[in-house]
Length: 79
Image 1 (tube, rainbow, N blue to C red):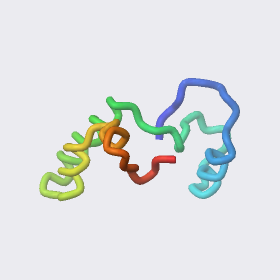
Image 2: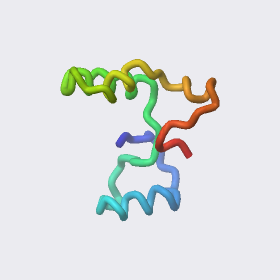
Image 3: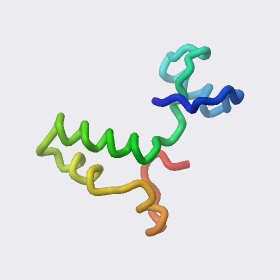
């Protein structure tokens, strides 16, 4: 969940996601925005530290954002 730094109106998908999570409508973070490359790297680093022997963590650490676009594959959560 990250802030998009803008004051754009909330999309229907964002409203539905917030409702499903019980998140207040006035909260500044957007939960449906895709993470940036830096955020993906940070996530991979944190996962590797928290779960050093986890197979999924190794996959996340090896996968760079954009790799799925070049191969034609979709990652879970891509819309």
